[in-house]
Length: 155
Image (spheres, one colour):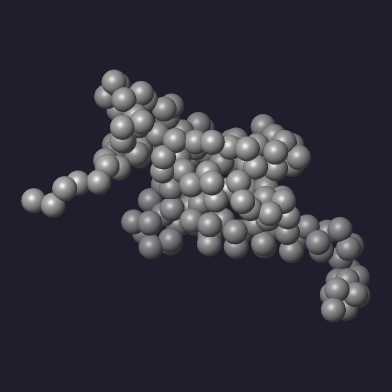
């Protein structure tokens, strides 16, 4: 099957590496979607039912998540990855520890191939944009909108 795909790609005028890169980007896009990356790292994504132009994906979010740990902001992944090589990204993702609500434990378990595909996708999204707001410790009042991320007792 793999030989057939490469043959089709070559017959269509694609160089094998370019064809593989396209498949990697498509896989990275799929990982971003099913991994829920946009849910936090793309402003307004859940509120708009996922109907946000891809040009706006993964630019971070000015809405914070506030809990006992302080207030965290979903980072601008385009900016983060723009400062890393592919091997640096893979190593970073495999060792990341983060404050809630980032599911770093899921990112740590991604395969190297999936992390590389995600990297290629993000790198192809366009300009890195601006950083998300900085973390605010528990004693600091956030200067942006935030979601209270603490279980509430029923009334």
